[in-house]
Image: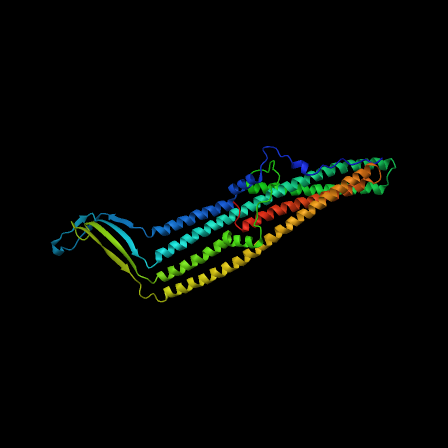
Length: 420
């Protein structure tokens, strides 16, 4: 009498009712964002860029400077003007206040360059954030998929261990041939290999999850529904051109390069500023010397001829603009290709989910049918095992497709800057 296999529960039963403390995808994303060193570095660079902007703005503010010196010495003028030699304590104090009135565009160009740098750093931080979110979703999906497959192979190995044991007993009783026993052992070995692969994949997935989030992968809630994505490819392209951080970074780089041209041209312009100075001097030229002074006025500086220095600097800045504009066109073309790939990838993933879902349903139905046939003795147990393997392969394909679809949807939203 052939032994029927234990009924195989649908995989959804294992995670259909997560406990209340199960961590969801949003929590995993939050942990990844809080733990990512790359994002921390990007935020630090953003803060540094903002500080450089504040520094550039401060160039238009008044400057107050105080200088002084005091010492001890001896002055001997050789009796000139009847001044005798004597020990002195030279003292000099000077206070200066300056206010730029006209800098030829230097200050405004520097502010524009620093402001662009701050924007670029902000866009880089946003791009890093988006990539961290995608990595968190991929890691979360991979852990769930690996756990489900590992659970299925655990069940399959348990069943095949019993089948192998029963086959050995039946072989000894002369009910089956050695070929049947070898086939049972081969199925068991194949299941062991599949379990080893599933265990390795699970260990790798959980390690990657912990590296990314800084916390072990505990009880995880099932995958959430797909996020809302742009309904059409044209809308996705429009959103990407308006919101993608990498493209905005390239656009801002063009503005920074143009500000660099203005800064180069400003080097050939005059500079004018107002000043006020006050000085207090003692024992500087002869013993007992005293002088107190103050003055207010306007200072100017203009380099009339720089030997080609300004002209070559302008040429270099113009070339920088050309290069940044070319990089902007390249970034736009690359982004268009990535959005199209993500859009078609999501559409393909949707079709794969539908197809693998039908495949999984058919495989499960075939498995149920073969179990019933084996129970009445019309099919050998090995046929049921073959159907079991096909059901696991179909379910694995469905799980992979569902995970790929979720990641593809988030990737498309990341490219369009549509992740809150």
